[in-house]
Image 1 (cartoon, helix red, strand yellow):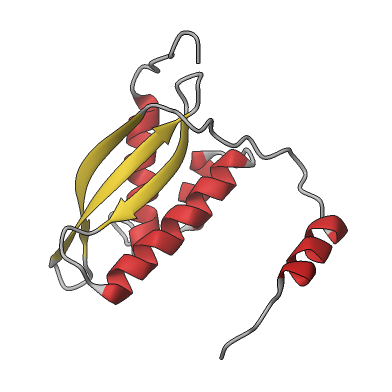
Image 2: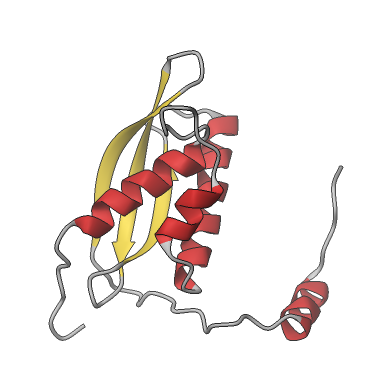
Length: 136
């Protein structure tokens, strides 16, 4: 099923349902770091990804981009969409722990999906001491 939404409809929705907190967008120039990781599949296989993590000026994680070393349209598109949704949620102030608790996990606590794997990676990154850019 395809749903066509034009810019006016999106703008109207934004006016009708204002966010509860202002969005904290990242500056155009910001610190970032690339991290390679594997998402473990339900069959035991692994899909390799690269996450580029962008930081707020105060050193907190503020966004994520997800790429695949091998081009795979479905997996690449899924990674892009997961990254956009996680990034927007974080910029509106949704805590990583809330997002992590919302995703499905197996009996060992491992995430069912790429979204959970990325959220776990970001939570690990958030535990590292923040690096503050002076003058940013």
